[in-house]
Length: 485
Image 1: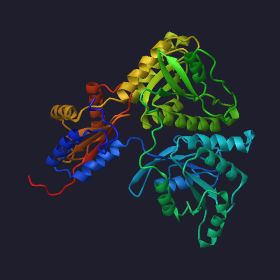
Image 2: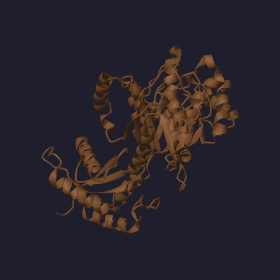
Image 3: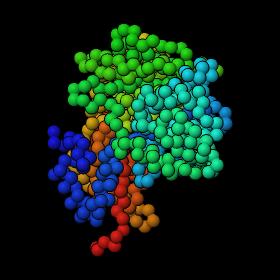
Image 4: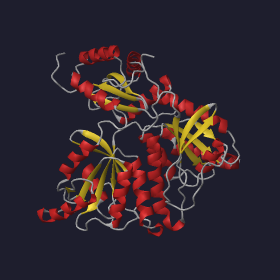
């Protein structure tokens, strides 16, 4: 199919479509470099991921706040602080990337090796490059050495950050960290900002321009499915049920490290690769840490997958953690299916209240296919594959530029943007710059409000489908250049 051209210099636009599009842009007063920049930015898809790792209290969160330019990561002296979000978006020298803050929580009861492995492995797995933060005033500890072994095993590019170097007199402390064998230590004071620019220059050298594809791109290869959800929703039971055998051992120890196993399972005559995320369970006195590790493991699994099947315990109220996991999958740009487990245990009253909860709490993902299942009895398991296939089809849908602009023209004529400050901004034209997920760039005469963008997204879904996939819409406003009227 000619419309599905991937990987050329125009994102997913074929040469003829690209030429036609650039002519349209020129007619509306957009410069070629401005348009190409917007297409390139939208067409690259997910941003490269940088993980910040290290032992507790070396200043990771302070460094994250310094990089993103605001106090957002929680900074406390005590380990064990749980954050609602562990991923932030950052920019340096005109390049954007995702920053994953792994926090400083340590699970002493499991021993130092287990805790460091659990914390670092999940973050490193999802990353394209790593900043390893060491306290230069303390020097390399046994814990730091354990992290180095993990980093060597992972084989990811590493920038060594020697933190708490507040002046020239401390630089000798940083030099001592050559002994870790990770190359030149970058002397930094995250608190005062000293040296962070030089360190970020090194980070940009380590990060790829565009992230490696973490999902199977081989033609005919099995599609990758992440089965995700908060602890104890029945992920292991569901995986065992779809596999038809006991494939996953549920370990009751919270935060226990073990290598994730990719399960090859045949469903509906098709082989799928399930990315196993089971194995994290809560223990009462370690809830904060267990939840935090669960979110790291979920993030790593989502990054490796094409489709996220989000399991919700229908017998309990939809929780903040459920919503966080949904948000994580949406922001990662994966196709999404929502599976409500334990459906067979619900009475009429609970079903009524659950439907109300879904309407209010999951309104933002009303487009995701839904299946009501029971991992215990196998109820409605046959509906899982069609839902996954629907989500993948939406995730890969591409709208030709000509058809999109005909749609946009009719939409703007029938429902113009509200007048603001005496002016009425207008969407002039647009294109779909990428798929997996669908990414659109709209070019406008003025600022397009968030409410109107959501309206455009709703109408795009009504017109072209996009079931089961997030849609990314970016808007470029025409710069004033004194055009002749």
